[in-house]
Image (cartoon, rainbow, N blue to C red; front, side, top):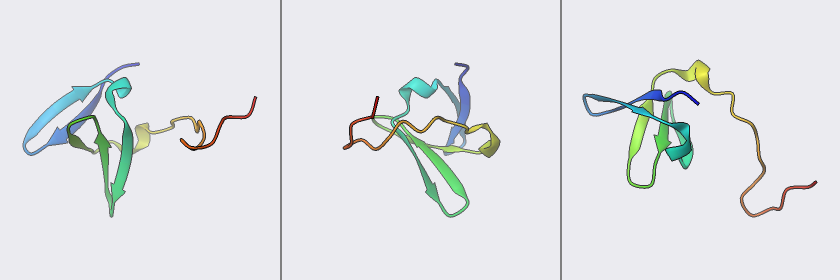
Length: 61
C-alpha cells in the first residue's frame, strides 16, 4: 500500500499504513497514531479501511 502524507508541527511525513495502530478524531481533525507519535491527517477522503471487528471479540468465521 502506498504511503500517505501525515503532518506534525511544520513537517510532512510519509508513513505506511502498516505502521499505524489506530486513528483518532478530535473535532474536525484526524490523527494517525504509531507506537510513539501522533500525526495529523489532512486528506480525509482516503480512508475506506475495512472493519475487522472489535479487539476483544473474536471474529466469526
